[in-house]
View 1: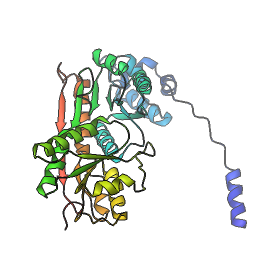
View 2: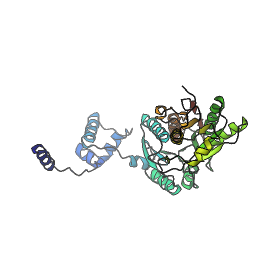
View 3: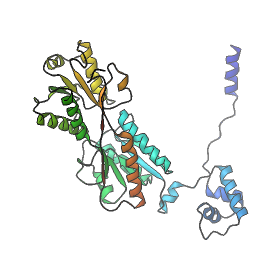
Length: 360
């Protein structure tokens, strides 16, 4: 008890924190005994600054002592780069694949001495416009963006038309204007799913979908359906599992439609791993043997899918490569080395075969 009381006394008797005052160039100049113009010339390495080495060292020591850093905004007002870029995503708590792209993008930026300002549109077109304006108002050198699923993208269009450095993710085929873009070839990913099912003798597929029309998922399903149709397979059936929240959670109860579909299908295909794992859970609850009775294949290759029983066969999204390529394109556009034509990089996914389709 005494120990607790002593702790409280120590906390209560601590000296109050000082109010922070941002150090200014004027404060540095006064402390160093020089003019503000001299401080400015030394810190910006101007060729017309003739200060002695002793003065230079004194000014730098005062900057260190006071914690002074040159203003990024002041650099921007003089037309200089701020080494800051914006990253606009649908949600801050985005799915793992987007998070991996974000992390890779930031690693690329940090390696070049740039900082990333991350914000979200909440997948709302009006919010996208507002956040683009906010980022530009903060003098970022360029912006990488996942455009919202819907909307006219007016502010994004204006920035692109003005020549502001912009790179989009997975948007080259759905925006009504051209910009630099990095995309995964989702159509080919769907083809890979279909070819794998054909290789293991599964021809009666059912696609598990979620509520909402997501562009990348429609491309995956188009590749799957076209490939199976060319092989003479029956039309692909569909079953919807509604989303319960905006973090990608799905209802876990077994719908009656699944019982009927399982009698007609020998494979379940999902455009995302969370959907595939939900379907796997449903099938196992019904006593369905996976993969003996039913093959299940997902998409994304999230970090935990090899820990399920059985482990999930899935398509690996090239998230890390997309993030690094996006920053590289953006940096070239910022540096003025990108040329006048919009560039598009399309990266192929890969198939990772595990126990949910092939018994091991």
